[in-house]
Image 1 (cartoon, rainbow, N blue to C red):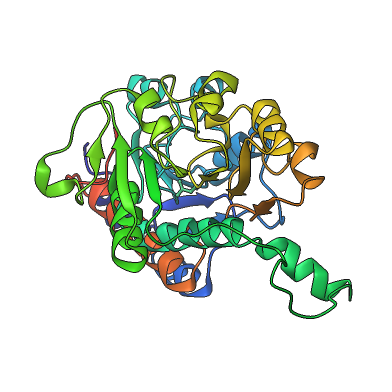
Image 2: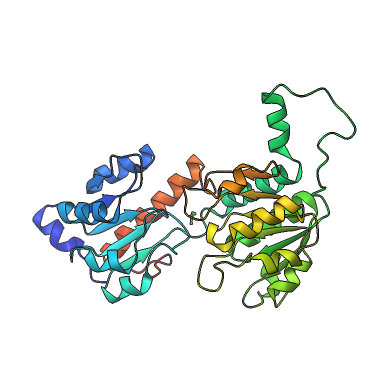
Length: 334
Ligand SMILES: O=CC(=O)O
């Protein structure tokens, strides 16, 4: 893209930015040094109208947005012409209509790689907590119902040596697989649209069809992006292919799962437990999950460490600066 910073620099003006949620201090300080910024003062996601009005008021050239901001074709069409870059503080970009952005000549950048470690930590946490019935154990203590150790108390599932199926062996999926193998000696299986080069497979067995993966998964981790091919992936028919007593973990996007079907499988015990960090219609949650003891829930925490969020922010700001100066960056999507 053409540089839009030269004109500004000539006029002695700072480039103009809208940030849709307050950022960690280190990032806000960097932004305050180099940008004329408006940051959403509310502790909630902006509506489409609010976002567009903010972009207009601010005459923003850049929008720094979050995965919760819905930047669909209608929003992109209504953005003022000044907007040149949309930067999302996320690796996922299913909330942005890339074709609509391309059509308006708006660049889109995101934060791949840098959050794979943090997200894989959450995936392993969900696997462990679901398998070892952490929620029920914690509740017993908080509710003061614990009667003391017993040989039959809250028996869970072995993680060590179990079969882990990864749907989506991208950067995050591979990091989860590597950790699961080295920490818990798990037998790895995966399904992707196409087979990875052997050096990237982490020793996992490739299943050319998802059905084969499901049948081989004591633990199933959903790590694929949300797109028309993956939306609604884990439906009733596919859940039935999991071995009885399997554990389901979702760190990707809520819409990969048919909630009614998963709740029914958890109720019947066909799926022994689930660990979920992402939900359809966040921040709403299917009420069925809240009534079940065998689910361990987190509020979309995958990349939420101080270090990871700060690194994600710097990565975005570097990319914005490079794109504004007309340079190319590897984390540009459009
Ligand atoms: O969900 C978070 C992300 O996509 O980074």
